[in-house]
Every structure is written in C-alpha cells, then in structure tokens.
Length: 297
Image (cartoon, rainbow, N blue to C red; front, side, top):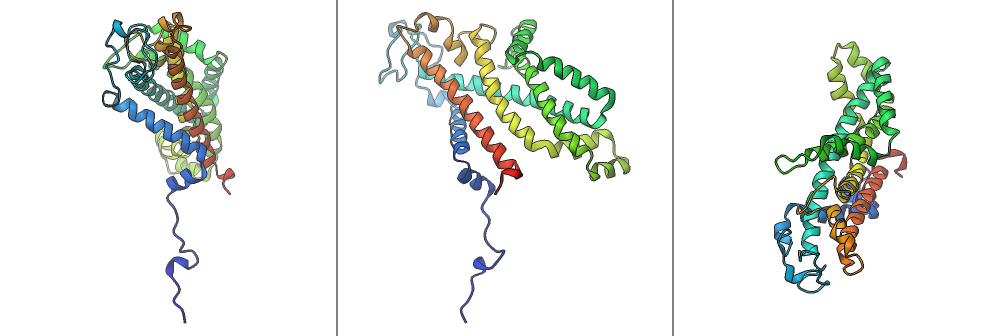
C-alpha cells in the first residue's frame, strides 16, 4: 500500500500568501506597484541616487542636451534635470500621500457618522458635500490655497496639503456613506446598541473597520489626484516655489520659455507626472478588483 503525502490530501493544499496571489493575478497592478515602489525609494533617498545637488546653479552648463554627464539634460540655470526629477518625487509623493490620507480620513469619519446618525446631521453633511462636489476639484483647491496662502512648517507646506485635502474629503464621504448605510442595518450593530455601547465606539470599532476595502481603494486613487493637483497648483504659481524641486515647478517659468530650444525641460517632468498618476490608477483599479468578492472566481 503506497503512502499518501499529507500535502496531497484533500483540504491540505498549501495556500499562497495573498500578496503573492495579487502579484500573480493582477499583472497591471503589479506593474503599477513596482513603479510606486521605485518612486518611493527615490523619494526616501534622493541624496544617494541623484548625481547632483538639485539647487546648485551652473551657468556654464545651461540648457545642455541629454548626455552622459547629464542623462536628462539641464535647465536654464544649469541644474541637472534628472536630479530635480528625483527630488521632485519626494515633493509629489509626500504631499500626495499626506493630502490623500487627511482628506480620506476626514471623509470616512463624516460619511460613517452621517450614515449612523441619519436625520438632521445626515442632511447637513449631505448638503455640504453636494456644495463641494458642485465645483471642479481644481477650483476648490485654488480657492483654499488662495485664502490660506503658502504656509510651511517643519518642511511641509500645510496650507497646500489642506488645499488638496479639502476637495478629497467630500468625494470620500459620499462613497463611504453609501457603504456605511448597509452596515448600519446589520444585526451586530443593533446588538451593539442594545448592549449600551457608545456612539463613538460603534462608529470607530464596529463600522469604520468594515468600510476599509472601499476606503483603501479611494485613498490609493486620490494619491494620484493629489499629485496632479500639486503639480497644477505649482505650475500656476500657487504651490511649491523655486528653488524647491517640484514637477509642477519644472513645467512652469523658464521651461515654457525654452520649450523649443530645450524640450527636455518639459518632457521629463511631464513624463514623471504621467507615470506616477498612471501607476497609482493601475494599482487602485487592481486593488479594487482584488478586494471585491464579486469579481473573484
């Protein structure tokens, strides 16, 4: 009688780690995640990766075409474009992550609270949300940053973060409220009320954890939106200012004046913005497919 391996026995098959399954079943999401990881590494250690200092002016190398010394060329001040693109990743990802996190958290709390309390509170939240959603997201960001101005503390442009987070919050609140309305009617929520738990405990310990899947998808997607907003505001002169390296700043000012003579000044920052937004959107879409049980086979 032949021995039967335990691994071959029914129900004993070794299950793969969810992260490995994601990498195998979501190739586009894996590509987006790989790009995000590379950009994150560049943002964390730019001083190690970048060949030059991003703010050092070298008039002898002004408008140098791409070469071995300067792989992406130089700008109108002789600064290395590759170096500024790498340092620009720190600005874009830092502001994008922080803005999306703050806006998504505020939106999630408001959405769940509106779904839980209903009544007057829900009507007020929905009214405010509708007002904010009636304006394009870039217009809201322009209004907020124009009112608050440019404020920087501890190396973070908090007013710019607020200008980007404010338009994100109502979008997240609307989606989270819709998901929380279904959770509110679950039996375990009724049991928590009957047990005398406080509203705060029910909202934060029993409802919020159950909307993490849609929240995580929106948080990831809005990082891409925040990166694009930061670049747009910087391009318009209301965001990051010279000499700080920012993809939006690199597209404005002298880059617009020398676009025909030195097209690399616009080409490479524009590609960096496009690649970052594309990567986060790919990863967010794949994450949605991965977390949605209706799409699992």
